[in-house]
Length: 210
Image (cartoon, rainbow, N blue to C red; front, side, top):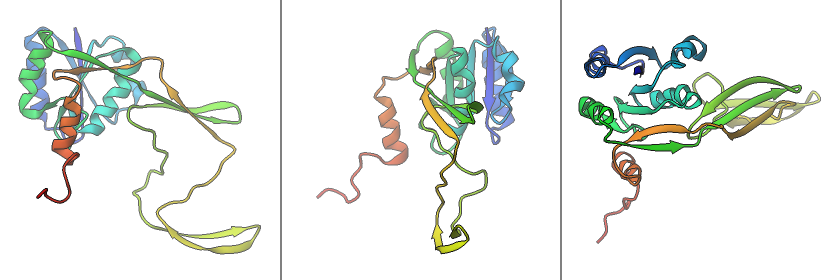
């Protein structure tokens, strides 16, 4: 078997080596990829990959999901960030979790991926995948905008806002990807909601009950 380790920008090298050691001790060949690497640069190696491990937060897991889903590769997420409610393991569970997976003591959860296409003048400009949602945004950091609006050289007004919606001759098509993401899980499905409660405080009263 061949395993790909996808790591976030802040993943310590010693954590990556811990993962490689466990996988290597169980006979797996490993290779690593940064979560920001272009898909075209890793595509040839992904075609021969049997298992994908992410080391980072939810952003790293989502990047790994875009690599894994189209190729039917099972994915396991290890949280090195603050929230990590999409990932299955915390850093301290890295070795034991990998052993459980390699020994077959896990279940496979399938998630539908979103497929997004930008169509301009009848041709596909770009195509991408998403797991939770699709966000269309500019590349810069968000900040308040002051916008002066004119229509046919006639001033309409000045607006301070978080953003502006601009209509365009472009078409955004969002649908389900033909292949589903295979996520490695150890607990029951309801554990996802337990993680949300622990990390985000969901289901807890704002004011203590009397």
